[in-house]
Image (cartoon, rainbow, N blue to C red):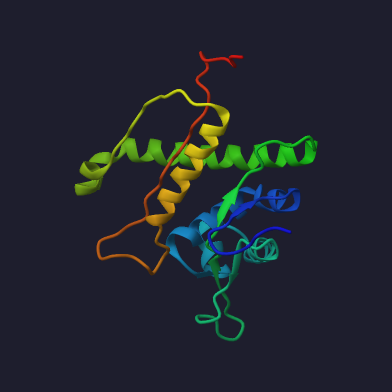
Length: 193
């Protein structure tokens, strides 16, 4: 049984991965996570998508537990959707080709979105004013065993969770911040026995 308690990691299964692998679904989920609830009509207009298709994709995201109806805002046929806060994880490995392919696609999309956002920020950093002065880029390396690398990643995620605020939980002057994290064996440091 999968632990779905708040804050518990959710390792995505093949069906959830396939549902999330659709580009528009990824975009809508990211939008709901960052900016808060929206209707299918608002999301369709924002992404230049067909309203019917947008509704279908939202139902798929709901079906797999990524979003839920915001019943406090919804009224009649006007349904607002909100992201379900959760620690989404890709499977580390899989011998099942379908799981491996779906995880690779979702991971690629996450990486591409992060890279695009970083590139966009760097091209326009002067327009961010005081935010540009608060930004930090860091590059470093260390030597770890596979178990230590897993522990390092879990400690990083735990630390990030202490700073998490969803839409509507902001401090005055807060804005959405993209945080990229990659920790992997250096290409020149091949597996050593």
